[in-house]
Length: 196
Image (cartoon, rainbow, N blue to C red; front, side, top):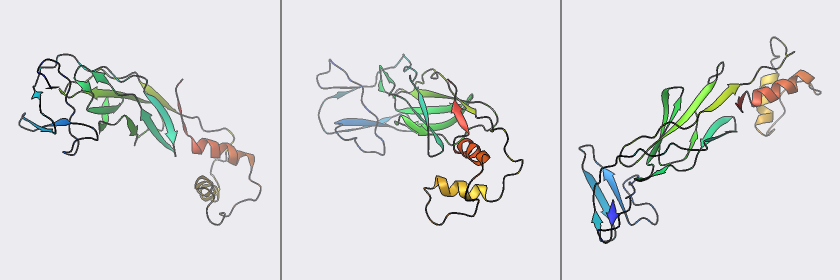
């Protein structure tokens, strides 16, 4: 905590990469031996106070697909120790990602044959972790009916060409594409959906 008068105290933000953030006047680094280094550009008082309350769980975790990848985002979790300093994303009950200070995460793994349940946990400057957020559930979309059992060789290169913005020469394939191709194309482009 930091104070200019020794009476009113404010949480001191952690340093990322050993440097003060833009506009910050002071920050700290926690060392492996439990000690702290404080970097400051102003005078004042600094103190380590015991933190008893856990930070609040992240709320309103949103999910969207961007360029075929799942992206989660949420507002900052702010508790009595200030903004959360890191977030942990879980898949099921297992840790998946640890993110220092950011409130957006590109998710590297989605279950292809079962629901994927993601939650976000905040950790504050005192090292206390929140309860998990409400779950975000991603479900695999059902494969469209009446597709060929084996897709013709031209379907994949044509799909990649269309997804890539139709750059370069059009791959070989029928000039008039069959109706099943467009059903398959839509499913392949977005094979997952959010549970409402």
